[in-house]
View (cartoon, rainbow, N blue to C red):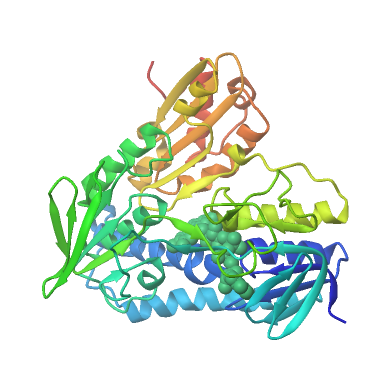
Amino acid sequence: MNEFDLVILGGGSGGYACALRGAQLGLSVVLIEQDKLGGTCLHRGCIPTKALLHAGEIADDTRHAAEFGVNAQFISIDMLAVNAYKDGVISKLHKGLQGLVKSRNITYVEGTGRLVSKNQIEANGVIYTGKNVVLATGSYAKTLPGLEIDGRQIITSNEAMTMDYVPKSVIVLGGGVIGCEFASVWSSFGAEVTIIEGLPRLVALEDESSSKQLERAFRKRGIKFEVGVKFASATKGPEGVTITLENGASHTADVLLVAVGRGPVSANIGYEEQGLTMDRGYILVDNKCRTNVPGIWAVGDLIPTLQLAHVGFAEGILVAEEIFGLNPRPINYDGVPRVTYSEPEVASVGLTTAIAKERGYDVVELSYDLAGNGKANILKTAGSIKLVAQKNGPVLGVHMVGSRVGELLAEAQLIYNWEATADDVAPLIHAHPTLSEAMGEAHMALAGKPLHAHG
Ligand SMILES: Cc1cc2nc3c(=O)[nH]c(=O)nc-3n(C[C@H](O)[C@H](O)[C@H](O)COP(=O)(O)OP(=O)(O)OC[C@H]3O[C@@H](n4cnc5c(N)ncnc54)[C@H](O)[C@@H]3O)c2cc1C
């Protein structure tokens, strides 16, 4: 019997979260995956990049050990050992996930699936029929016209993840999250890094103040960048890859990482044939992830929402709960926490100043400099917490830069999503000395009673 309550295509963050929650609710589930359970996030995305970044952090800490009175010497990066550490983390999580899927009695099918009717997916010559079909085929690394990925000199994040050497020099095309994270890793590993970004600033989706601080920190680290310039062409030669920009400038490096965004995996899977409404390859859905075809749902990077693993998880869970009849609340995408895990980190939730103003809010802003925070001084990190708030109203956005500030998002997202005001947060006691104290101090200052802040 190949009939299920849920037939899910794609075993990445979105697909497997839907499968786990569906099974937990007692639905019969088949999960079809052509590669490895866990998808991009576990094998080619979040987890491996964060392992590389952590290795980079240790390299930097070793270089700067003497500043803390510790005698240590940075010698070199052993990429084979770095990869072994990284792959060990992936493998452990992969095994755990496989065990979880098995324990929930989810039918797991390894194979390439295709939507062959409005309620059927075919894989390995077998038809799986579902009361509901959930599409979760994810995304791929895009490139630009005239820029052919050869996997050696011109690479995407896929190859960057598995390199067995540290290049002497790298050009990173694209100063978004993925580009800045790799720029940070390679700089920590000792490569000379140049970022080229077409938009006017690095991490351009973030608040302008965060971009400026990241740019300052990158400059201090020796990471070069050009912003507001467009790529024109690339040529390969004995000295490496040379790219020319529309402003006539050129750069040469051992390796060119193309990090210009990710596009949906939606071609040749039968989506168009079944009449799904699409835009530039993305499947369009309503606020409950329903497509225009009754009984077909889509989640994760395949739909035009934030391309983040935790968004995929949330969408997968939402769909399972909606199908079961729990009538879950739609996702408020402004309330999704966002982190660029470079050194320093950039973290935010809620609206930027520009978007808050665009939406007509009477905006007040407050920036708390981490220079006033004890733990930030102990860590020797610079940065700030910026609050965007409605005048006499709730906090509309929290924007942070500094080492480890991603960890502060847990509180920031509660503040934003529970529509707290500065007066609600100011009396909450934060442990001393932690970075989280800066969150308290920022709200105290916004409430008109700054403690460790001037003015
Ligand atoms: C370098 C990098 C770093 C990242 N870092 C972070 C981070 O730190 N935090 C964060 O939140 N997000 C991060 N992301 C984004 C995150 O990885 C994605 O948002 C997330 O993986 C999307 O989940 P998904 O289920 O939509 O797609 P995917 O994880 O891509 O899963 C889709 C799955 O579908 C399978 N599939 C496709 N077509 C078929 C078919 N026809 N038949 C069967 N199977 C099929 C694929 O093999 C794949 O396993 C990062 C991404 C990259 C590339």
